[in-house]
Structure formats: structure tokens, C-alpha cells
Length: 205
Image 1 (tube, rainbow, N blue to C red):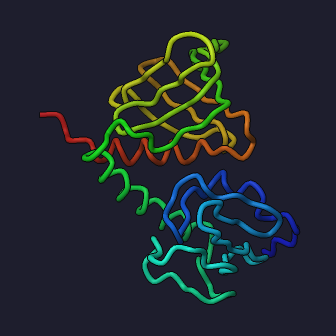
Image 2 (tube, helix red, strand yellow):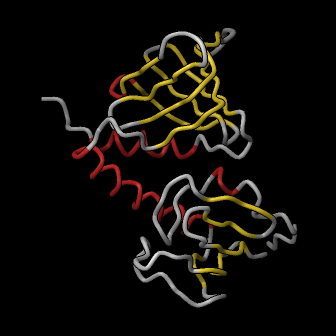
């Protein structure tokens, strides 16, 4: 199936969060048919067949992606899934280093996020709106007003996404939902990181 929409790359940040050139997270920005890195200048074109071709290699002299092509129009990834598979492995490697060296350092963070809590069939209450952050130990919301809400990752069950830019997870019987003001802000990257951190957590003895 061909994607002929001239704006077909727009909002790909909902699924893609890691630059294959410099390896930085949350630096990709979409426009038209292209996805570019605001940090290193890398850019790729999202083709009608769903593949990604390199447009600019960027300023990084040591690409995060092993064997990354350097010539314009070279095939970068055959599909969105291919890019996602690479970025998940990249994220896992970063998380492993982060957990040992600086567990309090944010992996992802976002301004303009509303955190809600409730039961599945009940109306949800707002816990505030502000900055959402995820590190190796917890996910927290620092609201514009009021006290910080912090949830230990060991208490979280079933992280997932809702309409791509909503993050939802359970703590006991309570469901939490992070709603992002930015329509291109990705709940998927948070769910991916929480899944990786959960898998890396030592099994209880």
C-alpha cells in the first residue's frame, strides 16, 4: 500500500523517539515527508512504500546505529517497525548505563502533561498538570501547583498507550492516565521504557 500523502511523516514522533545518527532521545521533529533531528541535523524521508531513506547524515561522527549509511537516498530502515526495533535496543542500552551511573537522571520528560487517576468505569480525577518525568526508579509529575506526585516503577502494572499520545498504567486497582497537550508527544516512548525497566529489574528472592 502506498502512502501518497505529502504530509505522511507528520507526527511520526508518536512512534519514533531516538535519532539513529547521534542517538539522542526526544530530538526528532517531523514535517511533510521528513523526520529530522534538532540536535545533529540528521534527516530521513518517509517514502510512499513505508521505508525511510537518508537525506542528511547529520553532524555526528560516530553514528549510534551500527553500519548506518552515510550517502543521500540510501535505505535507512525498510519500515517503521525496523526503526522501532533498533530504537528499543538503543533505549535498553542507554537505560542499563543510566540505571547504574545516574538512576535519578530523567530518561524522558515532558511539559504540559495532565495526570489523571481513577477506576476503569469511574470518572477520573486530575492530580495536576505540569512536567512529567521518568527515571530508572519512578515516574513523577511536578505540577504547576501543589506537591509532586511520584510513583515507584515497581508498583506499576500493564503500561500501555491510548491513542498514541496518552500513557496509561495501573497501580493496584487504580488506573493512571497521562494526557499530553502536545499532539505529537509520545506516550509510547514512556511505555517502552517502563517495559524495559521492568524486564531489567532483579527477580524477588
